[in-house]
Image (tube, rainbow, N blue to C red):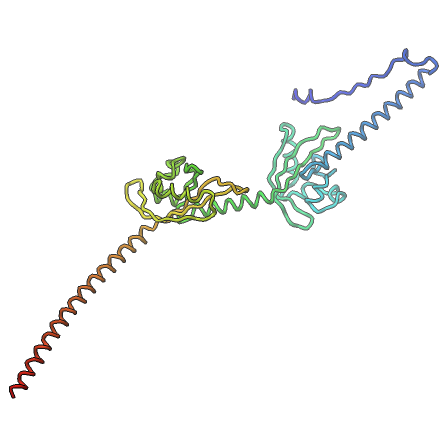
Length: 331
């Protein structure tokens, strides 16, 4: 409260004394002249102050709405007209309870009470436009030090931020529930994030992997190291299959892909790794290859056996033909 005392301004007007004025001018005329001068000065100062006040109000980027403690709108700036779709006269006939969705007398009293002890009150809310549509808003409210108590609402349309946050939440949920393992690291390879799927694959908690070099986790310099070198400054996705080791020493086969993460201006700022556990596929592939090799071996053996039998059959046929020819000659 001591700060409020020092923030007050006391204006003192020092008027010239009678001794310095011409003796031909009466004291009554001096008094009237001084009073008229002071009134003009006050009027000019008030007009100048109001002009600067309006200029300041209009220069604010956010929608600015001046209200009574009850929420009755008294004055607005151009941005408020733009945000809500009403003209100034229409807004000045309304209450904040009509433009802030869910606001009521209790909310307005709570805001006014809060500002008795706090400099600002902050609200996250949805505001209603004239056409009935809504937009998410961040609202800062403060109390103006004037002859009459006034509240000033600074309203910022955060639609873009709201959409971005929703998208980030959706993407985070997708990454968290993705069957593939996801790891994010900086350009040096230090891990900053792993999803639950990768934790399960490697048998290690995210806390254990924080700031660990990705090369220690994904195949060493030959795999992760080569992928990092390949993707930095390259907008393509690189992929390799390799064998990884779980924390318990068990081996797993994985398909590891890497993509460079870029800032808005296209500067590389990290690497995103995607890891798919292909152990079952790899084992099935190996079993298929083994079965194919076994089948080829048996086919080859059977072919050789058939060739041998064919040779023996042909030899027997030749013997029989020779014997037949002898019999014919003997007759």
